[in-house]
Image 1: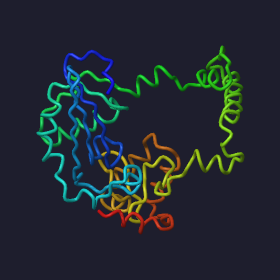
Image 2: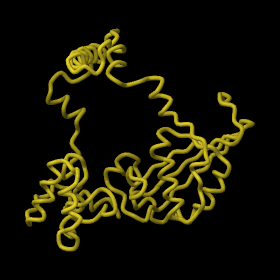
Image 3: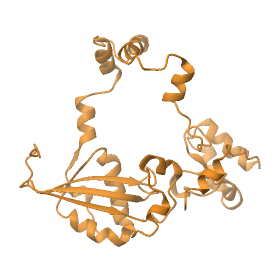
Image 4: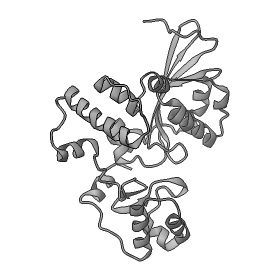
Amino acid sequence: MCAFPVSLDRPLAVLDIESTGISPRADRIIELAVIRLEPDGRETPAYWLVNPTIPIPIESTAVHGIAYEHVKSCPTFAQVAPKVAAFLDNCDLAGFNAARFDIPMLSEEFMRAGVAFDADSRRVLDAQRIFHVKEPRDLSAALRFFCGIEHTDAHGAEADARATLEVLRGEFRKYPDLPQNMEALDRVFNAVDPFNADRGGRIRWVDGEMTINFGKKKGQKVRDLVRDDSGFLKWMLRGDFPLDTRRLIQNALDGVFPPPPGGAASQQTSDGN
């Protein structure tokens, strides 16, 4: 085992979370793994599988392989929170995209459980941020990587369009296994989620019903909101939402609901929640 290259003055907890979704406030932790690295190099692993107490969407199960039936008999996060907090005591935190996802998700769970956890006092080592800083993925970096050309007029529209064309040519030279027609390319790189009622996924099909997929109303059926809380839907119409989202909401308020995609209801119901 290689020595850790950073000098530690207190333990470092390297963590990873699998969850019901990507919203720290609305979603819940399902799986938490932590490796606690001591300043003297000792490593101690810990692992928790928890009942999120809310349904696990089928698309989340497709990512991490955990359905509700796998965790329904597990303890909740509130039940394991004291042990998790003790394991993380006095630790700095590390992960991949931890600053944007894992740490906010963990903080929300501790808050709901009523267990003290001061994330702001922890220093953070995020492998993704190092990767993005050292290996930038902007247009200038792509032109340099694929074409060996410096982008001297970055952010000029004409020069950026020309650079993009050259990058595309360079990508197809470097990756000969890429599809060679637009239909296949669009299908591979712009896959449409069949459970999204709108393009952005703000409204999703759940059990054959259009369902809100963000904020405090997440999980509530649009049909029920038309009846019980039309003010929220009217707020969406006035808000900064894409046209296709607003059109779905306006149609719903007018009593017009599109049919669900084929098989959506049966697939969602079979998720085991």
